[in-house]
Image 1 (tube, rainbow, N blue to C red):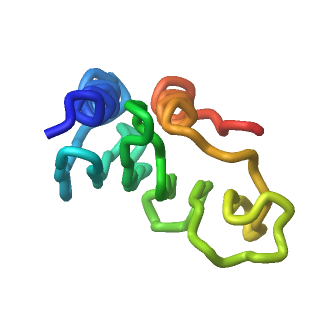
Image 2 (image 1 turned 60 degrees about the vertical axis):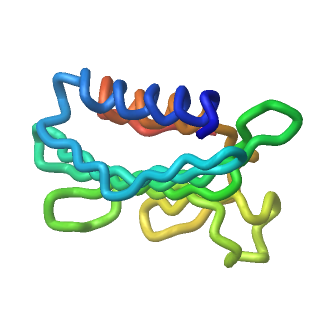
Length: 133
């Protein structure tokens, strides 16, 4: 088990568990090995909006590096508010594969790192706001 990966996952879980705006947290999957790990969480906000988070990380040169991610924020009726991900579709985007789905459109984003995931999640649950590039 990698202590740096455990620390990152703990930071994400604490952010959710300590938030007054989140009424329910489900850890839907978690695994930490010596050089890689993943975490899948579902969070319900007090206004019934839902956040689904998936991160897959690996260590490189002693640092935790974000490899794959999806952070989806949706309304109670399951309509999308925003989703940040690096799925390998939308080849036409300038900064492929990094993108955001917003208002039925897809926009290129800068490369998302693990600290950006923390900032995006924090922005949603503390302000109910949208993270901007």
